[in-house]
Each structure stands twice: as structure tokens, then as C-alpha cells.
Image (cartoon, rainbow, N blue to C red; front, side, top):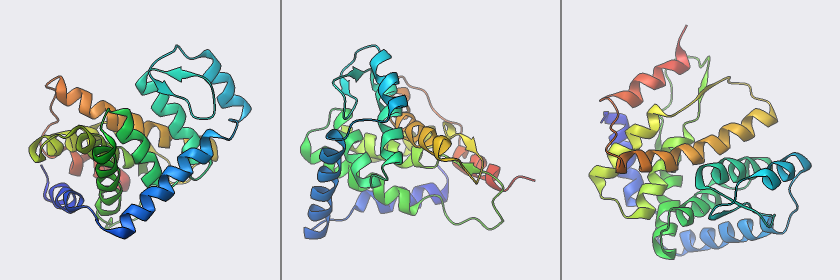
Length: 213
């Protein structure tokens, strides 16, 4: 566990409580409800119709999909409609099976992690990373009720699942990467349960990719 990741996780664990958070969670729920009422774009609708059925809804359609595919698809829709990340994490918290309280706690922790990590770079960025995957993993782990040590291992795993991307992204690519971040966060928890571990220092090593010559 690197110092930067540990510090961000400690901040995320404290969360944010009180009336302000409750109000923002209500707004997040409203954003999800609004998206359910909007028909997806033609390309996403066509993909939804071809999905194998699963347990997770594809918002705005009558279809469902398996968890990983559903998070990819919904994540892309979230990005296209600029859905706040708190709402995205609230959706993820529910996907992992957390009750209402834990799903909300996961969403708040995920948002806090996204703000706290990664630390600002010291060099000009020549590449980007799907850093949201780490925040998503913290959301999922918190919603599942994993303890602090487990959340640390999950976050390091998620760092190893980040995808390198160009700094300047098309709308289409940004949607795909946003979907990947949610799906990779969920996958990191599944890998943890399968006893997979990341190499020590993975998060710092991967971050170096952003400033590579």
C-alpha cells in the first residue's frame, strides 16, 4: 500500500455526513430516476437488445445484463448524460448488493476517493488513466461492508486494472472509459474474493504512466 493511496483511503473512510450529504444523495437518486425515463441513444439501445439477460437493469430499457456488461453499458450512458459521480456510485453500491444504508455509504466513500486520489502530478501529463476505477472499487468494497484492510487491497487491485488513455478524448471514448471505471471497480472486489492480490506499490507505478516520455 503506497502512502498516497493510504492517505486517500483514510480520507474516504471518514466520508461526509449530515444534511448536506443527505440532500446530495436525494439529488443522486433523482438523476438515476430521470435517466430511467430517457430512451437510450440508438447505438446503446441496439447493444442493450443484444445483451444476454442478467440481474442488472440497463436504465431506460426493459433489458437486463450480467453485472460487468451492465456496468459498462450504464457507465457509458452516465457519461453521455453527465450524471454526477455520486449517482453513478450510488448505482454501483446497489449493484453489489448493499442495503440502502451501505449503498449510500459506498457512494459517499467513492466520491471522496475520486476527489482525494490520485494526487496532483508533478510533471506534464502525456497520458490519462481511468482513475475512477479505484474510486469505484472503494465504493463497491464499502457497500459490501469490507473492512479497512480489505478495502486497501481492493483499491490496489483496481489500480492495476486502470486503462491508459489519451489526455484528449472523443465523446465516444470518454463514455467507454467511464463504463470501464465502474466495471473495473466491481471486478476488483470480485478478484479480492478470489484471493487475487496486486503487487506492492502498484498504484504509484501505474501513475508514472501519465508522465512517461
